[in-house]
Length: 208
Image 1 (tube, rainbow, N blue to C red):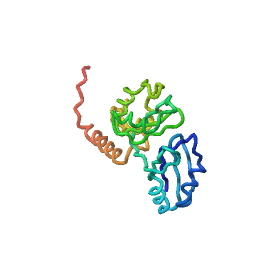
Image 2: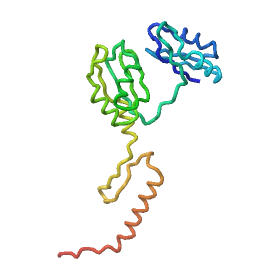
Image 3: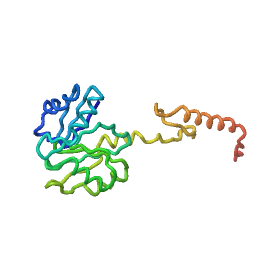
């Protein structure tokens, strides 16, 4: 079971220390510590649930209460935003709150001096980028833009555009594995109707 651990002091917390803390409740398969959060994999589901109940709010360091909860899978259709030049003094929660002024935030991860923010809606993501790019946060001006992978993912999700065959004038679909069998069948039906109607079309009389 994958457990999310937030409000971690990544500069002062080792994976071994965090793994030892969780091993009291079950077998720890792996532990990865980032800048301000971590992921711990516990083999037994019951052990993971006990760890969440016991360690949520636990102060691993004075004044830093851990946020411990079951890791949730990220929705597929989110808008991924890259945030550069993030101050070391800026926490994930502070950055998340900044973006939440423009719409629901699914996930916010700060990694070293940059971060990734996942927003639910395209309009909210664009508004956040427009309003926050260049904004000073904790003494540093952040760079905010749609991530390259985010752009590529949303371009790939667009439906294939229909095009007209230049030689025959017929509508055709781009050759792609994404084109479904139903679309191909409809196109074939339309082409058959064109062929059946062709002999009955009146030809324009020749001028010569």
